[in-house]
Image (tube, rainbow, N blue to C red):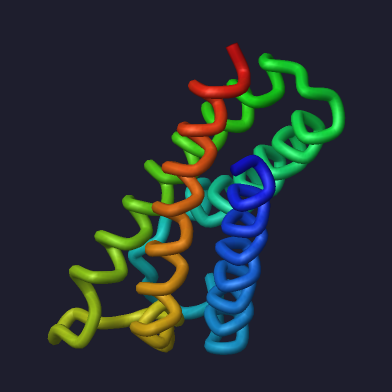
Length: 132
């Protein structure tokens, strides 16, 4: 289960990286209006990658504190991701739709969210079963 969580986490990061590239290719923060706060834009991938690094450390060491720390980071990332998703969803296609985030393919957003949700579940199950 630990490696299934790792696979899901890497897949979510890959799709998230794709969304970041799409956002930057369409102007990113240089657009006049964006619904995405800069701290969340920077924090979401930064905390996700830090959590992934701690999860990999858990896989190598088996240290329970690494697993719990990775899960805590994942909860922060999920909250930030939900914030980004709701802001994207509200502006999508409406008369107030502006910003580079409107270029996101809906399928990529859905895939990123779905794989991220699977990652949270797998990490949580691993933590409660193996990292006591």
